Image (cartoon, rainbow, N blue to C red; front, side, top):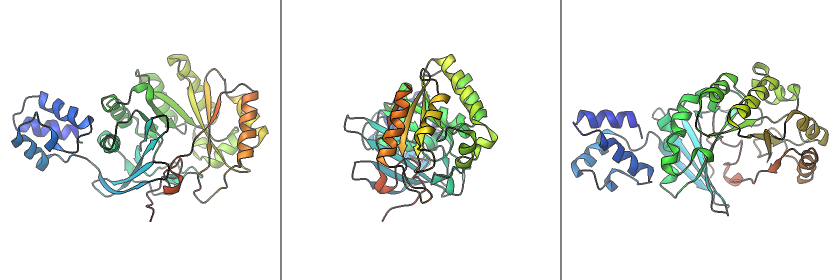
Length: 328
């Protein structure tokens, strides 16, 4: 929902300021349209239907995985594709993976989104409407900005959306913003964000050379500088940083590479999340044995590490697979 347009249209009709708050309360609760907002006059509800679209995005396709994960493909008003994901877990968690851009300009080699054509940054309303779509399906309680795009390239809109997520049931402590290490945005995040929103670093290699091969952004903002900024985040905010590390067979998954990674990361500051590679056509994923050995080396070095539970792979909704391709 375009809240600025909503306020503008309500003011033009001479409605009191509290009307915008009433509409937002209903929307954040997951109603499916203005018709359900029973404390608004019927004539106003009808006018809003005509003047303020209930969503800034149009749903064009939705698929559900065997594990319960739901992937939605939206289009912006110009037709740009945007994907978002609802992940359901057995412990009751309902987590959203939200996109900040249509496509991504940073072209990480293992990520399907990076192989798309980049369109543009999303507005805060377009980001929030992804979350609201799933809130209309069921209650949600976690969100990660790990979908299409680099959030730190669109930080203002990402934060504007994130600051409203508690109204949907997602607290700041259960919201995570991921970055490949785009330093200008990361520095602003470290310095300016007062809410306890969590930070994740998409790292994927223990050396500058390998990281540059996998992630061209490393040539512009080297890993050492990015890690320094992450450590400054910890010093200022006293919150650990999640390190995302996708496991690529024969590329970054050797035990000696795990030991090199452990030397980079202070275990008081970082927690590693090992991500089984989800096929996007360029690499082979690491074997279970290789992942276990890699994790074992991190455990021996007392670097906290977990292996991510893959969700939605059969509908191309898993980490690194978002590319606006619908399944038959």
